[in-house]
Structures are given as C-alpha cells and as structure tokens.
Amino acid sequence: MAQYSFDLYLLDVDERRLLRGSEEIRLRGKLFDTLRVLLENAGQLVRKDQLMQAVWPDSVVEENNVDHCISHLRKLLHPGKYIETVPRHGYRFIGEVKLDRPGPRLVTLGSAPHSVHVPEQEVRFFTTSDGVRIAYTLGGSGPPMVRANDWLNHLDFEWKSPYLRHWLSEIMRHNTLVRYDQRGCGLSDWEIGDFSYERAVTDFEELIEATGIERFAIFGGCQGAAIAVAYATRHPERVTKLILNGAFANGWPPPGPGATEQLAAFVTLIRHGWGRDNPAFRQMWSTMFQPDADAKAMDWMNELQRISSSPENAARMLSEFPKLRILDMLPAISCPTLVLHSRDDASVPVHEGRLIASRIRGARFVELPSRSHVVAPGDPGWDLFVEEFSAFMEWQGEEATAVRSFA
Image (cartoon, rainbow, N blue to C red; front, side, top):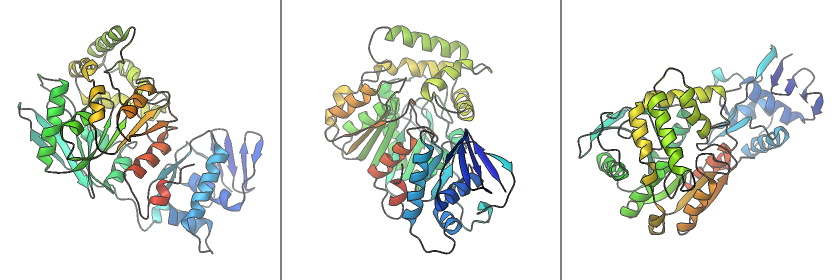
C-alpha cells in the first residue's frame, strides 16, 4: 500500500499510521482518511462533497464533520501550515508530498463532475486627463470592489500566477472586482513624466469614472492604502467599505534615524541592478516582502518585479513614497474599515497599522501571525487574512462555514 511523506511526517496507508520521525501520532479512523485524501491530491482543491463521499461513504453527514476533522488535523500538525481552506469550496494540501509506494486512491479528482471555474480576464484601457493609457480589468459579480495598487503590478502576469489567481477568482465569486496597472508599469504606459502621489490619486478617480461604478469597497495595500484613504476622504459618499493591509501613515521608510539614507540606497540599487538577468537585486525586495516564501513563490516575485516596470520607473515610484502621508486624513474616514498588518513585517512596522486603525473611528485592527509584508497562500498569516477579509465583506450563506473554519 501507499506511503506518503512530507517534511518529517510519514503516512503509512497499509498500517494506518502517521509518524513524525520515530514518534507515532495517533489518528482515529476519519482523521486518518481525511489526511489520506488530502495527501493523495496534494496541491489540488478537494471539495467538501468529495471528502464526505470518500471518508463517510455509507453515511449522511453534515459539512461541519469535515470542518472538525480539518481543524483537528491542523492542531496535530502544528506549527506547520499544510492545509489551506478554499472559501466556499473545500481544502487543499499545500506542503510538498512524496509518494514512496504507489497504491489505490480513495478519491480521484480528475473524475469530479464539477471543477472550480477560473474565468478568463478581459483587459480594458482608458486614457487619463494627462494622456496616459491605463490598463484595467473588471470581472465577477456582486457588490463592486476596487483594488488600489501596491508597489508594482502586471495584470496579465498576476492573473497567471498560481499564488494569486485562485484568490482573485474567489473574490470575483462574491464581488465585481476592478484591478488596474498603475502608470509606468504592467500593461499601462511606461513613458511617464509624473509619478506624484497626487497624480496617482487622480488616476484612481479617473479609473472609477471609466468603469462607471457608483458605490464600491476599496482594498489597498502598502502605498495603495494611501491612495485608498485619499479617495475615501474626498468621496465618502461612494466608498462602502475600506480594507487596508500593510499600510503606513507617515511615508516610507517610516521617519527615523537613517530613513533618508535607507531610501537613497534602495533607489540606487534599483536603478543599477533591477533589470539584470541575475535576480540578486530584486531578491532583496522579495525577501523583505515575503521572507518565508518557498523557492517557487520567491522566483515568481522576482520575475513579477522584472517584467512589471523599468528600473528607472521603479526607482522614481519609490522616490515618491516618503510623500505618502495620510495620518491627518484618517479621522475623516466615515465608512467601515478593516486594518490588517503582519506582526513581524520587516518592511512596515506593525505599529504603523495600529496607528492607522487608532485614527479611524470604529476601525477593526487585526494583527496577522506573519513576517510577510504581503501575505499569500501558504504563509502563516494567510488563513486569518482570508477569514477576516471574507467576514468583513460579509460573504455569508453557503460559504460562511468554510470561511470561518480556520484552526
């Protein structure tokens, strides 16, 4: 019979044992079978109905039986983050699994009658009042949400990412999502004269007019949060909800000893090393943004930065960061607001997130158990991020149990 190994663990199907090194972890029948199904299909979505059919083939059970097994498995496998919740649908085992001996499977996903459909995106363009062509996409259904860009982006490359495409598609199952490439990067025009903060806010305002949406939520991370805050204070009647992630209040780097020298060093490194085939210079940023990412995720982040913009544009964008000051705007925000921030963020200290939340009336602040500036699937803070995001956006109904079932 089959044996599956991941990290220090070995699941022996024949002997129905889970070993961590030489230690045996006792799993009752349904827990064992649930883990077995996830390992058989590592990296793939396993729907709840598939789990119920495989683990309880002769019984009628409720979804909370599956949720209970997943929660218990997470506790047994702690502190590893192996099981990802896919809101509304099921679960995915995200660790690297080796099949030591072949054997029969409890479930084969290829025969599943319903697969998760990931729609194709349509890229559109509008021209700003100063003549710059901006690329954007609009897709999904439900109440509108607009993502204010953080750092660099590339609509096409991002959409093909295994790390983001499913999550973006999940948002689009609940909301009509607007994404765009800011001026100077991605599919938007690169030959740009003005990279100022004020121009970035104006671009956002003109994007909204181009889409024709009236009232909407805004999700903004990093400098995108500064754009979101400015828009929310200028147009409070149009913003229904605000989600800020990894935001800073007083420019970046945060004011303090050596901040000016730090920024100058970063700008110099970008100008002289960003576009090289050797990713060493870009790796500095990738490591700072996601220090716990695996090799594949790190390679993707390195490549995203390379293709998203020119070294000169990236340097000019970064040079504007000290001017992104939103502290005095925060008390004017009147919509419900969720502020998320990683506890050990190396790019933007967590006290910046606390400060922002403290200045917004009624804001909810959530500290994520992560070192990443941008949390992603597989990150220690990802489950809590998804849970808080989906609850705040009121993704209720049939998916409510799934989005709240994180251990």
